[in-house]
Amino acid sequence: MAFCAWCGNHVPVVSYASCPRCGNPTNGAQRVAAGATGGEGAGLVIGLLVGGIALVAVIGILAAIAIPNILTAMQRSRQKRTMADLRSLSTALEAYATDTNHYPPGNTPADLTPVLTPTYAKVLPAVDGWGTAFRYECWPEKECTSYAVASAGGDKVFEHDSLQEYTAGTQTTKFDADLVFSNGNFLQYPEGVLAGGQ
Image 1 (cartoon, rainbow, N blue to C red):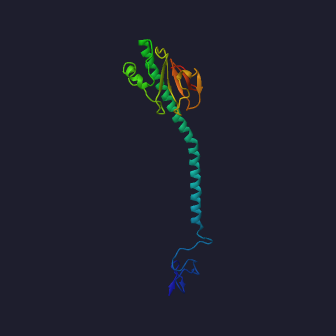
Image 2 (image 1 turned 90 degrees about the horizontal axis):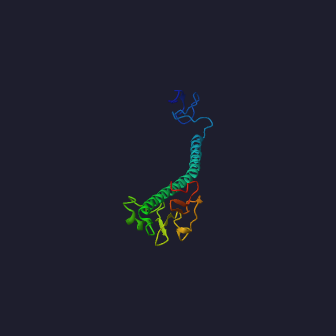
Image 3 (image 1 turned 30 degrees about the vertical axis):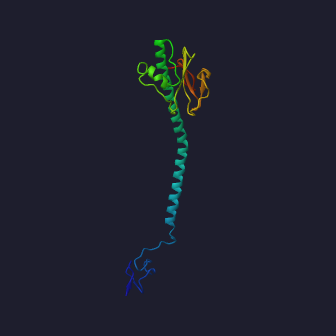
């Protein structure tokens, strides 16, 4: 004699067949809900996929906004560091000129190091924020009564053959533009920055 595992009703055979009294499978298996086709699991997977795609899209949009701003901030930081280093070189050169009535001859800060350190500067900066060597010129060649120090900027290429070719008061918005400091003032400098050495 067989009985339904759910309600104990007498049945001819215990199987997956429904019990006439309770409607559950007589063998005790879980009952399949009316109209259920197993789509709940598929709906969950689809929901997770849609949510994942939306999350990736949001992250992509945020990255598209943030990355250019981060790159610009990095370039601006390099530019500001370079300008500070040009001012430091200039301060050492001005102090030397105060004592000797002329600027030291040379082409690079490395040429100036034996003359200016440690008396006029503890350490002379040799490269700009982009890793390119600074350029130094003094003129007229034998007297050295004027000078200029410069950075090639982000493109690492100087725009002119001589630092004397730069025009005072040239402002730029490009990080690739040269930065030139001469006789206590910037000749070429970023827009929005004072040309003076302060």
